[in-house]
Structure formats: structure tokens, C-alpha cells
Length: 62
Image (cartoon, rainbow, N blue to C red; front, top):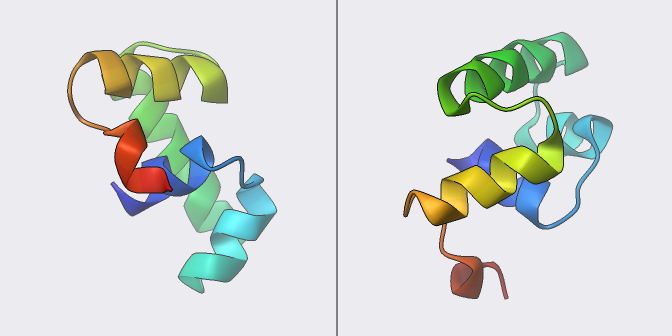
């Protein structure tokens, strides 16, 4: 969920890795799993799908 929230805030994959203190390879692995689970292909689609499914509340991001 933290990864998804950071993506929704507009973070790049590199910024996500730095913020979570993990490698960029770890972020890429989690991104692939997230996209697969949400059946999406892009960051924007992932945020939209997660919001639509109630997994992400855009009001929490402020």
C-alpha cells in the first residue's frame, strides 16, 4: 500500500526506492506484482484501478 500511495503522489520509481530505503530492483519487482494483481500496465492505470476498487483513498494523500 505504501508503494501505491507514493505512486499516486507522483513519485518516480527511483524516488520510491529512496523513500522506502530499498533497491530499485525491489521496487520494480513490487511494481510488476502490483500491476499484475490490478490487471494494469501503467502507473496511472494502477492508481485509477486501486482508487476504483477502494484500495486507495485519494483524500489520504494530501
